[in-house]
Length: 150
Ligand SMILES: Cc1cc2nc3c(=O)[nH]c(=O)nc-3n(C[C@H](O)[C@H](O)[C@H](O)COP(=O)(O)O)c2cc1C
Image 1 (tube, rainbow, N blue to C red):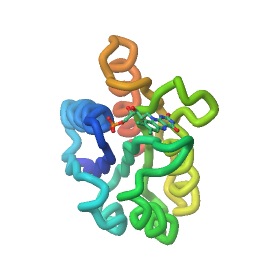
Image 2 (image 1 turned 135 degrees about the vertical axis):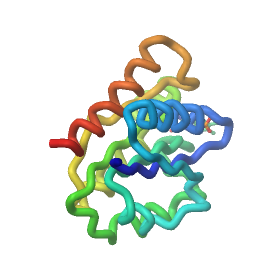
Image 3 (image 1 turned 90 degrees about the horizontal axis):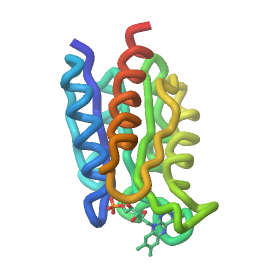
């Protein structure tokens, strides 16, 4: 059975909701998933899973979650060749050019690890509530698994 690690950062719950939806979608596809909050997670745990996912919020005009800075630094030092990764996250379109910048930053960090990007970045405006949001997150999960199975 393929395994996945889903790591989220949240203040008001939107990114935890996104992570919950991704975890449930992966589980429905037969993946064994471990989900955890970023400040409670060692980036090196990604080495133990086939599919690695980060779901961060963006704050203060394009900044990473403060409690995820160590995780972010450690992630870039890892060798995750052979693993599949994906990044999804909730931000607020009100912030225009800074919309979900943390998603792009985590994507860049993963690129340095040698892991393979398994799905395009997903950006959700505020809470993942619309049919379109749910479809995007479900497709994200199935694309990750398909990439792993290739
Ligand atoms: C002070 C402040 C700064 C923010 N800055 C950004 C930003 O630069 N880019 C963005 O996309 N969203 C920004 N947001 C919006 C949050 O990322 C958005 O509300 C997100 O859904 C919060 O996720 P959470 O519920 O998981 O904490 C900001 C929100 C606050 C309160």
